[in-house]
Length: 336
Ligand code: SF4
Image (cartoon, rainbow, N blue to C red; front, side, top):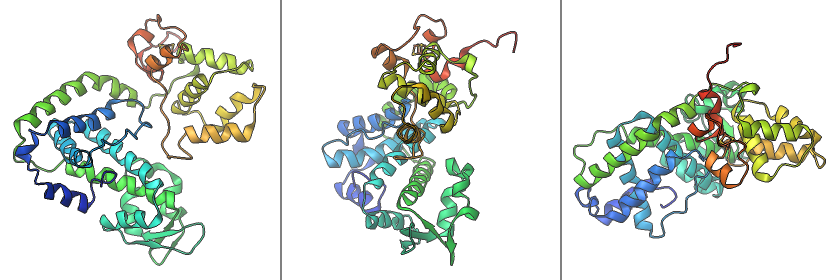
């Protein structure tokens, strides 16, 4: 229930605790935990989703509906989407560790027609309607591998790997949370309203930066920030890069739309280069392995702490929080 607080028995558990909306305002610890859940969505490090659950289970479970209540009260589409995605990714990471039976049970709680299959390499099969409901919007809609024509389908059942089932459930949870935040609430208790205002204010401050960060305008190489130019230059000369520098360079380039192949090739001058190992790591950071979530580049403050920021005095650098937004603040040059 801590991991999957949206399940019917978690909802029943909360109901049995006897918490009613008017009481929630009294329960400071639950509200504080709900705030942490929401505040985590403001961060760039979307891959750091596994904040340790609060040690008292009833607090952790109850903080989920309270967080939804607060997000509903803020009434900001961007916050809703970020929060739903953050919780859904957490679910995905938990699901990856589960036995198949648990994955099936959770899927069935959403009404999926899903069962085990004997067809290798697909241990599960699901009704095509459940499949389409979770691939026809969001990030999966543009990926050819999720298109129904590219799938193994028999008797109306789509065959999926265990990891694919988890990824589809991530979409289901995201939709569930977004739908919940659209429900009408008759009244928000005063203390919850206070937190709602606080979150609204904090989010408003960060929103322009977050919106900018979400833009898909890709940088040309001449627009890369000083730190990335430095890492690129040293890589092309075959010089050593620390782990932080490599991580930053690779995640930056991937987020700018550079292909895995090109990123792998960049490292071919490094004396200890091994293509298979490098490719594995780059694919992992691109979200093609492991969690399935592309990694974001470290924030400038983190790079400064590690002593790898190249030029914090650069006027653009002084105004940004993450190298990925550097090119968006540059004035277009006359040549362009
Ligand atoms: S401030 Fe940020 S973008 Fe600029 S050089 Fe330092 S780490 Fe890179």
